[in-house]
Length: 167
Image (cartoon, rainbow, N blue to C red; front, side, top):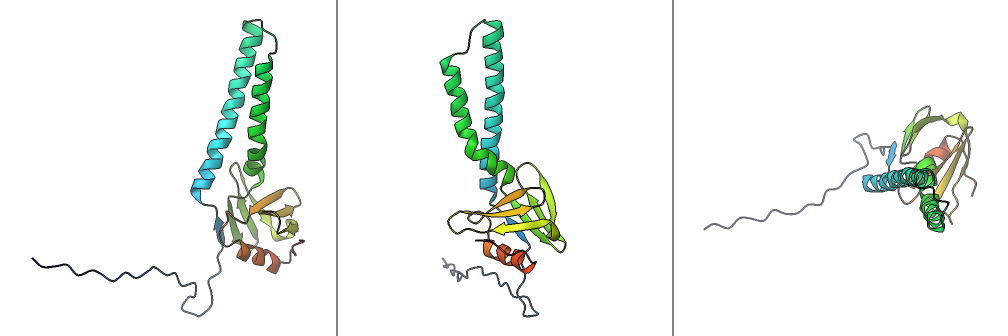
């Protein structure tokens, strides 16, 4: 029997320098999909929970002629306690940021929007928070420094476009 030769293991390295010698600028910043789906699952669960509470309270009050119970109030308070940390993440936290010549394309779990560089009014990047806060004329977005890969490059690009971060 002949023994097979083991192949030499060469780790995969990605060279950010193209043949011209200049580094390639990263233009897309995307949160890992498992974090995206975890937030989406939690948000969907909260919506279904509130729909269930609506039907059960309607049935118990109208059909069964029962008054408001303490157990029902506790259930509403617990559902609110679950929803409070998730709703801002769903509505304001950027899941995907793409840098374009005329602005930023920002997507979150519900909608996507395009923000022109002129519409960005303020950018805060406090070190004590895990979020950078990008304010525009219409809304503000949370940029999660732990979830978005190459977050520092995104901050540098925003600085280059004339929006100075306020720490």
